Figure 1 (tube, rainbow, N blue to C red):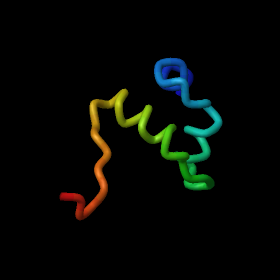
Figure 2: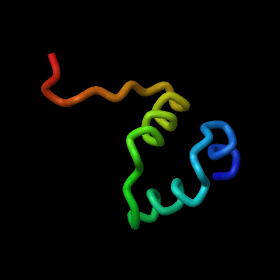
Figure 3: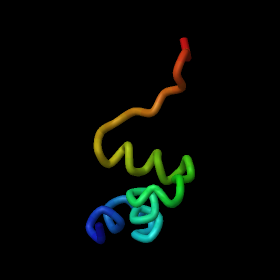
Figure 4: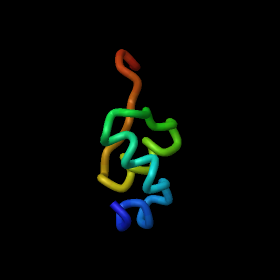
Length: 47
């Protein structure tokens, strides 16, 4: 998790809490993680 945190700039504790389902991610953090994994976030139903 440390490597992912360093690569994305998302705090390790935020990632851990998200993975443990004890906290959601802020949208800016989710966007950074998505970009790291090559994902694009889009709104459902967006045209």
